[in-house]
Length: 379
Ligand code: PLP
Picture 1 (cartoon, rainbow, N blue to C red):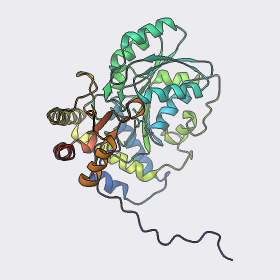
Picture 2: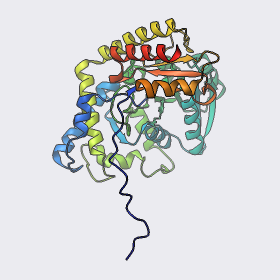
Picture 3: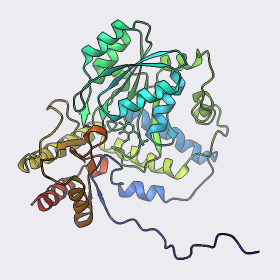
Picture 4: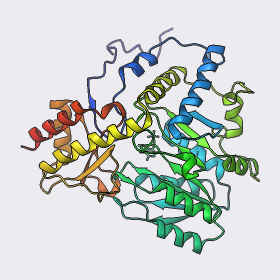
């Protein structure tokens, strides 16, 4: 028999080039995380694996600053965590207030609509934090809304919103909250219990400096009650919390899907490193390197788009000066200096550059390297 498709033997083993990842994520892997990822595969119900899962939940509660029992990593990127929050907490016909001040608030609206619910959108200019007064006004105008969703750290602009105030307002109006902490977790304070946030999701490739493909999530008891009280079945089989928990809850441990074991080893190590450094030190490190980067970007005449006070240390978005060729400059940084920075998204495409200093990428040598590379390519 002659096979219709012949083996493509000319294809070599893939070796990614060395890069310094200073974009919106993924960030550089810590060498210990890299080693953890390369360990042998064991079964997802192996007792040793299962005890690692319990440690992961403990480490994750520290990172999120929560005592929520339901805290675990979903298999899939941040978008899976986002979608899991919406499909479990939103039912057809619901009204959900979504605050949009960048790309990811827009995705939340999509999620609400795909759940058959209505999104009441609180708009803020891209580059600004969510305005709490606008949320208050929207909740007064829509007293039947029971859920508020917002992005804590808008990666598309580098703006940080006041999660504590937004959660307080939502709670006063008897609403649960869905909070996107994809870019904030481990880079800037995420205090789930102090905020009283109900469903919070993140991702592993930002300030945790692990590989993409896992989404740490945490749900309050109020959120679990809401899921339990659903009138309709969750439309996604994969993300239905009641089913996923058959695997992740200590009392059950039955097959749901094959857990991405090696990625979980990596996350375990990334969270262990975070615990060893201490959250306060990790936040301070991100802030210190942000200040240094900012001083250098100021020297180069690059202006931040986010007003001082709402800037994320781990995501620095600056306006591209008139006459500069966005793509050519980013390409030169990559080809000549191995430095990856981020482009603008949506309406900000071609208008901004985004310098990420996330997790293991937030190091002095990277700040100095990025600034000198930038100086060379702009000269
Ligand atoms: N939310 C925010 C704020 C993000 O920055 C991202 C990714 O950059 C996502 C959600 C989606 O995460 P992922 O790309 O891992 O699916």
